[in-house]
Length: 234
Image: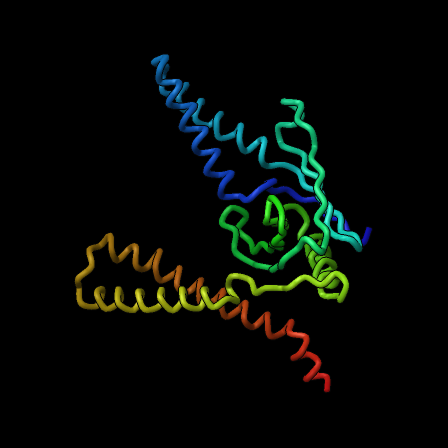
């Protein structure tokens, strides 16, 4: 074994799990209406349905990196209460289509978080690893995976992260144009007080964030570019 990482996450893609949890919560709340319960009971049914799905699909992850590929063990959050078994999966390098590393700001943790997304040729088709517990350990694990994925026999294509992509640049440019137009409306006195608040707090701050993320990602990509390093060394 080359490296190991303990973290938390979803066994599948996050958004389908979140949608399923929301649907289960709404279904549980709707069914509770048949018994004409107090509102607190209906709200409890809503949260119970959501937590049931999240407790089954989210949990503790342990990743093991070897010369053949990436192993993953998953223990659901509700395993101790529902008797659920841990799941073991192994993804060979030959099954991996690509990987990418991303950085983004987490509103819940109020800090920058990093992730590694690996595209595989079989379910779940995407493996997303987050630095949910130990940032230094995650960084060491991600670096080890990237080094191994860059070698000949275990080569896996590295794709740019979202903020390095053309789509992020186009989206940022669109946001900048929209912000300039809205600022023009503001200077012309065509915005209501609510519109001014949204412009200053939501739109302008969002545009500044997008520009900062795109520029930071492209600068980091240049710093990590092996060709650039070799030319500088030469």
